[in-house]
Image (cartoon, rainbow, N blue to C red; front, side):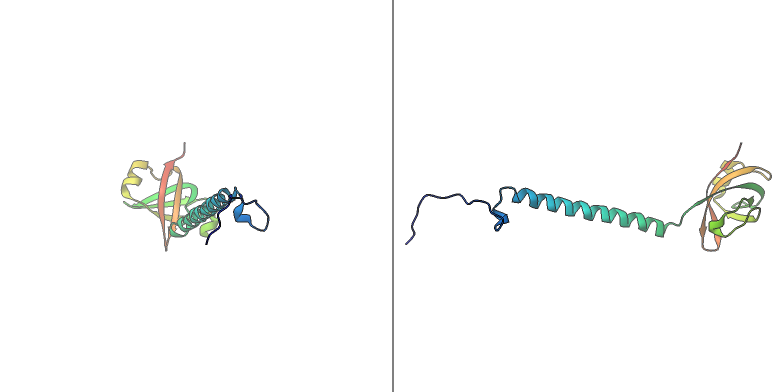
Length: 131
């Protein structure tokens, strides 16, 4: 046997936080905050992964000594401490022949270039003549 009577609304109390009318809003806000945190964490990890996969490039200023091969430049350069090279040492830089041809560099030209160490070689990222 069931006794039906007038329905009395539940009142909110600190002992029953789920009974709060704002509980669903708070739960949504918590979920949104958790999703935002996870998204930022993933983006941060992706940024770190990009620096691990692709090593940094270093900008160097120097003078072209010779083009020893279609894909090889010899450069006398300023100090590049990150690569362990002192000033005015010779650097052999490998680059795509098309990139070197487009730069139109010749011995004696002052250049600005970006290089990346890949194993035992130094590869060219970009190069331009200084004016």
